[in-house]
Image (tube, rainbow, N blue to C red; front, side, top):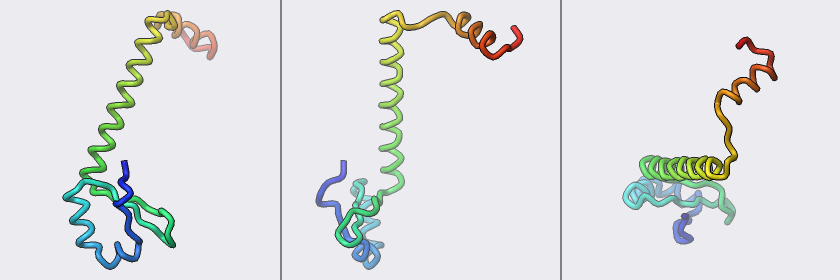
Length: 95
């Protein structure tokens, strides 16, 4: 989550890029850059971004598995052979 204190103007970022980039590396926190007082860009250290992305990906995978298990428990699945036969019929594929 972006902290409200992690906000700088684009002008300030341009003037102090080296120091701000070092701060981003150390903190791992994203920084909101504003243009004319409005949020315009998010800047984040690459390693922190990758870690956030991997965490999000694991969460998506966990949710997909949970949904699949729910469907199995609810009887909302069918044998693969039935599905393949339906596709063959629907698209006139050789069996």
